Image (cartoon, rainbow, N blue to C red; front, side, top):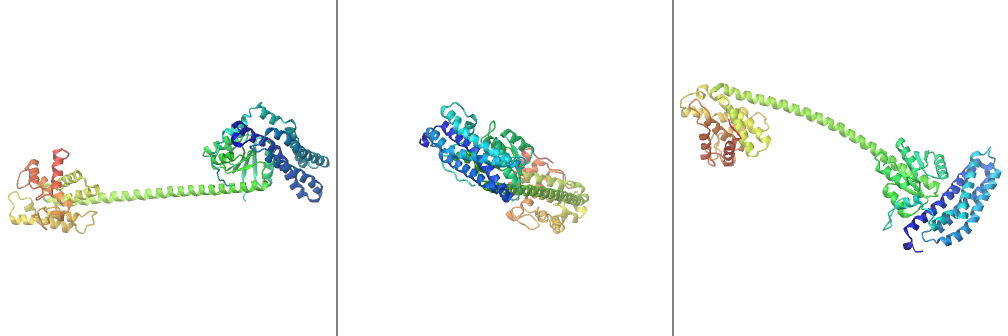
Length: 521
């Protein structure tokens, strides 16, 4: 029968045949190998038993080869029934015959464990003989009398492969062996214990999940075909659970379908071994998986240490940032206090214009905000606005407070306040060019300002803004030498001189904030 003609049902039944036949073979080979190891350790006293045990082990391996060669995907049931039954009879009789002779020679009272293992070999041989002689399983497969729900459940979990896939094939650990067959569990667990592992067993998938949830296993050896919850389902639950997903799993099965192997690896299995397996190979695979787990565990420890270090560093950085912020706030508070104190010193000498510098600063900041300047630049304008007339501290009080018309000579003295303000502030390290702004706030775009007669782009933008705010505030409020002219005349003044004495963009921004009523003195 060509492989492409095999039905899905037969595709499920053929691996089932191999699984059923390999299970007792696995027991025969496994127990006979362990007994050979025991006789080697006993030396000459057990030398007479070694030949018969070697014959049993050899017959078991020949039996396995026969099963593997016969139960291929394209095997024919009728040929299988007639030829295989005949070929296997001699091997089964050999195994049972040698076992019975050894049982006669071994004293049960003095060789308890040896006797028990021989009984298990005999039981496995009888089980194998019964499978073949009565042909119950095969007949039920052929006639469809049995549904084999467990097998169909497992096979339905496998996605067929469209392309061939490539796959990879001593500190001790705490292992969990999961298998529904008692002999398989016993052989495997005893082999592993001999190699120094701590081993626990679970007889089905549900029990395995309960044990995994309560204990910290280093590795799980998981049978594929089990009732209720099969190996695929156990593996799937483990890999979907955060607490268990990093536990390495080696799948063990008599099924050697490449689809099944790849499916297990896709779900997250560390490795896959077909039964019966070589114990040395199993040990190497276990050690390889445990070493990977140890490396992952170390990586996880390092990751947590790094995260903890990062949290500690972040906490220290936050503390330092907090301290710096508090220090900055204290410095800012001290700066504001100093600036306000300097401003107050001028206003004490000129009570008639008290609040002028504060109002100019407020209007200048509103204009700068309307123009979309950044907050840091606006803060510099605020400070410069408060200090823009600091130089008037050198102007005699009788001139500042004079109620009548100011002479040309007196105006010349007043005009010196811009340069004097610069001299007072030039050695103070502000974050902004405060001294230059104060010096230039009386400069005009057309070059007819003072004290440097700068023009156009040579004037700092901050100085242009304070210059407009200064004119508007001065005209809109009372002065000793005249009454308040009002905001409308002040706005008319800067409108007339827009682009001439005053920067056009600054004037437009000033006009907008008054028109939109977003600012008032």
